[in-house]
Image: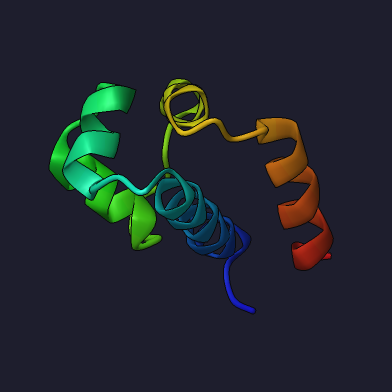
Length: 79
């Protein structure tokens, strides 16, 4: 893999997609629930954005993501 930050962004985006899909909601609805702009949300799902900690917190709360589990799994994949 390439740059660790880019790799994290892509993997985190995949977790966000998976969580949103499980909830059966649109990107627009997920962005609204997390109180982020639709464009920001799209970029996070696409792995094109490095979300700030507070944004990660808001997304994890809105999409019922166990952030500790996600970080552990991403860390394992990047090792």
